[in-house]
Each structure stands twice: as structure tokens, then as C-alpha cells.
Length: 77
Image (cartoon, rainbow, N blue to C red):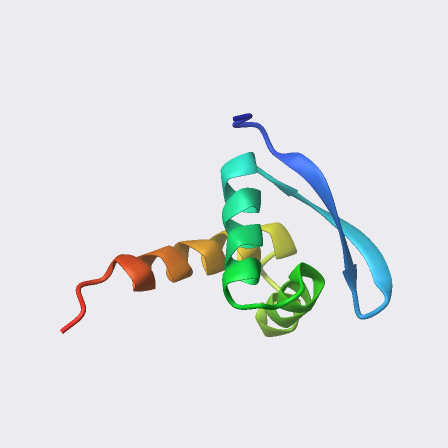
């Protein structure tokens, strides 16, 4: 896997954009979308709407992926 960020195309609310993400983050982001039965563009748009002005979309996606993994790895009980 490539550890350097690569550009990935998304469509957010009808507008094309791209984010630069490392392959492991992009693959996990796609898996989250598939696991939750949501189109990747819809999930990206939701993250985009929720992020603050001081956080870029790529960083917001990385944080989303991290939080998802932490939630799934946290002890249940």
C-alpha cells in the first residue's frame, strides 16, 4: 500500500471535489460506507457539513475513520 496521500474524487451536494488521503484511510473509509450501506459521497457530505472551518475535509475524514475504529475496538460492557 502506498503511504503517500493520493487524490480521490468525491461529489458533495452536486459539486465535484477531491481529497488527498493515504490508501489505508481511503480503504477504511470505503469499508465504513459499505458496512453502513451508505454511498461514499453521502457519507463524505455528512462529514463535510459537520467539520469546523478550521479542519480540512481530508483531516475530517481521517478523524472520522479513527473514531469509527476506536468505537469498534473499545471494550463492550
